[in-house]
Image (cartoon, rainbow, N blue to C red; front, side):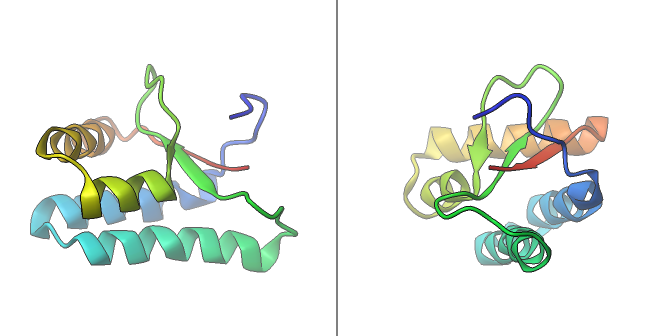
Length: 104
Protein backbone atom coordinates (compact mmCIF):
# COMPACT_ATOMS: atom_id res chain seq x y z
CA UNK A 1 0.00 0.00 0.00
CA UNK A 2 1.20 3.51 -0.77
CA UNK A 3 2.42 5.45 2.27
CA UNK A 4 1.67 8.76 0.48
CA UNK A 5 -2.08 8.23 0.77
CA UNK A 6 -4.09 10.69 2.83
CA UNK A 7 -5.52 9.54 6.15
CA UNK A 8 -9.31 9.85 5.86
CA UNK A 9 -9.90 11.39 9.27
CA UNK A 10 -13.61 11.83 8.59
CA UNK A 11 -13.97 8.05 9.06
CA UNK A 12 -12.01 7.71 12.32
CA UNK A 13 -15.09 8.08 14.54
CA UNK A 14 -17.13 5.56 12.55
CA UNK A 15 -14.27 3.04 12.54
CA UNK A 16 -13.61 3.35 16.28
CA UNK A 17 -17.32 3.10 17.08
CA UNK A 18 -17.53 0.01 14.89
CA UNK A 19 -14.63 -1.57 16.76
CA UNK A 20 -16.11 -0.66 20.17
CA UNK A 21 -19.47 -2.16 19.26
CA UNK A 22 -17.79 -5.33 18.05
CA UNK A 23 -15.69 -5.62 21.19
CA UNK A 24 -18.82 -5.21 23.28
CA UNK A 25 -21.18 -7.57 21.45
CA UNK A 26 -18.96 -9.72 19.23
CA UNK A 27 -21.28 -9.35 16.24
CA UNK A 28 -19.10 -10.13 13.21
CA UNK A 29 -21.71 -9.19 10.64
CA UNK A 30 -22.49 -5.84 12.27
CA UNK A 31 -18.79 -4.98 12.22
CA UNK A 32 -18.38 -6.01 8.61
CA UNK A 33 -21.48 -4.08 7.57
CA UNK A 34 -20.33 -0.98 9.42
CA UNK A 35 -16.89 -1.07 7.79
CA UNK A 36 -18.50 -1.68 4.40
CA UNK A 37 -20.58 1.47 5.00
CA UNK A 38 -17.35 3.48 5.31
CA UNK A 39 -16.14 2.17 1.98
CA UNK A 40 -19.52 2.70 0.30
CA UNK A 41 -19.72 6.27 1.62
CA UNK A 42 -16.25 7.08 0.31
CA UNK A 43 -17.02 5.56 -3.08
CA UNK A 44 -20.30 7.45 -3.35
CA UNK A 45 -18.54 10.80 -3.03
CA UNK A 46 -15.26 10.15 -4.84
CA UNK A 47 -14.27 8.66 -8.10
CA UNK A 48 -12.82 5.42 -6.92
CA UNK A 49 -10.48 3.08 -8.70
CA UNK A 50 -11.47 -0.45 -9.53
CA UNK A 51 -9.76 -2.98 -7.30
CA UNK A 52 -9.36 -0.36 -4.54
CA UNK A 53 -10.81 -0.26 -1.07
CA UNK A 54 -10.46 0.95 2.48
CA UNK A 55 -7.68 -0.24 4.73
CA UNK A 56 -6.63 0.51 8.27
CA UNK A 57 -3.63 1.00 10.49
CA UNK A 58 -4.81 0.38 14.05
CA UNK A 59 -2.12 2.26 15.96
CA UNK A 60 1.05 4.30 15.47
CA UNK A 61 3.54 1.46 15.02
CA UNK A 62 1.14 -0.90 13.26
CA UNK A 63 3.14 -2.36 10.37
CA UNK A 64 0.15 -4.02 8.68
CA UNK A 65 -2.38 -2.70 6.20
CA UNK A 66 -5.63 -4.35 7.25
CA UNK A 67 -8.13 -4.30 4.41
CA UNK A 68 -11.86 -4.87 4.49
CA UNK A 69 -11.18 -8.22 2.83
CA UNK A 70 -8.78 -9.08 5.67
CA UNK A 71 -11.62 -8.45 8.14
CA UNK A 72 -13.94 -10.73 6.15
CA UNK A 73 -11.36 -13.49 5.84
CA UNK A 74 -10.32 -13.36 9.49
CA UNK A 75 -13.79 -13.15 10.99
CA UNK A 76 -15.41 -15.71 8.70
CA UNK A 77 -12.61 -18.21 8.06
CA UNK A 78 -9.65 -17.21 10.19
CA UNK A 79 -7.94 -19.20 12.87
CA UNK A 80 -8.65 -18.59 16.53
CA UNK A 81 -5.22 -16.94 16.80
CA UNK A 82 -5.84 -14.61 13.87
CA UNK A 83 -9.21 -13.58 15.29
CA UNK A 84 -7.62 -12.92 18.68
CA UNK A 85 -4.90 -10.80 17.06
CA UNK A 86 -7.45 -8.75 15.09
CA UNK A 87 -9.45 -8.21 18.28
CA UNK A 88 -6.30 -7.17 20.13
CA UNK A 89 -5.50 -4.62 17.41
CA UNK A 90 -9.01 -3.18 17.66
CA UNK A 91 -8.66 -2.98 21.46
CA UNK A 92 -5.37 -1.10 21.16
CA UNK A 93 -6.94 1.26 18.64
CA UNK A 94 -9.91 1.96 20.90
CA UNK A 95 -7.79 2.35 24.02
CA UNK A 96 -5.38 4.79 22.38
CA UNK A 97 -7.88 6.53 20.09
CA UNK A 98 -5.47 5.88 17.24
CA UNK A 99 -6.70 4.76 13.84
CA UNK A 100 -5.72 5.55 10.29
CA UNK A 101 -8.18 4.98 7.46
CA UNK A 102 -7.05 4.97 3.84
CA UNK A 103 -8.54 4.22 0.44
CA UNK A 104 -6.38 2.89 -2.33
